[in-house]
Image (cartoon, rainbow, N blue to C red; front, side, top):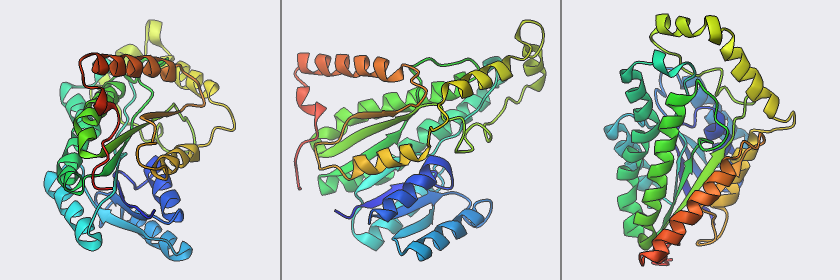
Length: 299
């Protein structure tokens, strides 16, 4: 089935890879990003050239997940051009790296805005259409926050953990509307994307310098080198895009609630399996077992 799909944060990384892979599978894909006439103008050109060269339905669209007005406008364009929307992929996000104490509260709020509140804006723009259709799929690109996490990633992991918690709660609230949820959990890919290279840093440089002395001198290199050593040489970031494609191409009601793509095997999959099982058991215990699977409505 050809799906109408919008991906947030599709200018690079997992989003760009997934957009191209889904278009190659015959879907109509909207690769959304902000600043399409500014910073991301080269990425817009790349999307257009890829679509033309491969003869696929891949479209770039302006969608700033930090603005409800921008988000609403983009969704309205997609609906007007296609008459429906089938899949939303929550991929937009930003990573930071450094000692938690050196980040200001305002920086943490900005990070939360990008990684968590952005999904709420997109949901508020798209879910009314999903509920009216009686079907839809939300794909959330989470992160390996419950495994063997390292220091200096606290602000990022805190935000991604919040996004994951939001995804879990939304799943139950949307199941009776016929709306499915799948959570994709990539591990720490230290190469293949600019995830670590483009990570933000702390504003309070003086506080950060204090952590780069005495007992914690060289700690940044210890973390980065240690993480890199856990990732096999053949780890391929396209496996995340492939997992997204696989989930979307599955039949309604058969899609997994959570998929891990973690070449480092940091243990997050084990922890999530226990947490998801306990959640399912508790919902059944209080008489809400039906919300563990999407209801068949207007299929």
